[in-house]
Amino acid sequence: MKILAKNKKALFNYELLEQFEAGMILKGWEVKSVRRGSISLKESYVIVKDGKALLIGSHISKWPGAEIPHGDETRERELLLHEHELIKLQTGMKIKGQTIAVIDVHLQKNKVKAAIALVRGKKLYDKRAKLKEQDQKREIERDLKNMIK
Figure 1 (tube, helix red, strand yellow):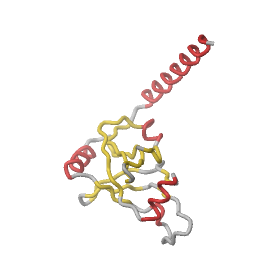
Figure 2 (cartoon, rainbow, N blue to C red):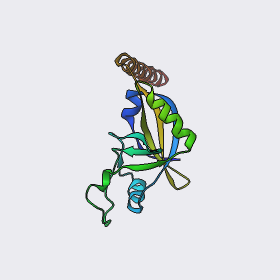
Figure 3 (tube, one colour):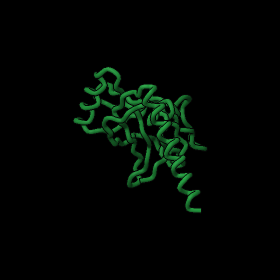
Figure 4 (spheres, one colour):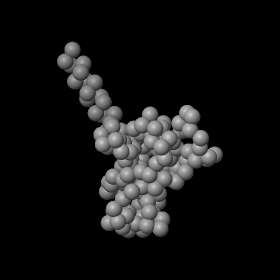
């Protein structure tokens, strides 16, 4: 599995509750651009509408030589999920404070897939605690490295 794009903001701002893997319906030039790594997930999110999961806000850069309509780089893209997964996502969205975020886009057996998750927003003190923990881990690793030398 080769990760093509990762949404670092989602991992920092949200607590993952349940994770799903969804296929993406893309056009030919979009697949080429995604494989090249020309995709941005910073402002992207997922909604469930009319029994379909839609990826909104992702930006796939234009492939050189492709003739695309204006504004087609940020269009809504349909995600392929099983019906029971869609039901779980819909019921999770009804709970206050929960939403669906895109975690990453990756290749699996030459197919473009998106890892999405039902998430809950973290509190500010949770974010601070995580940053403090990361700093402590880095400091311990640095000290261990210096002790070995």
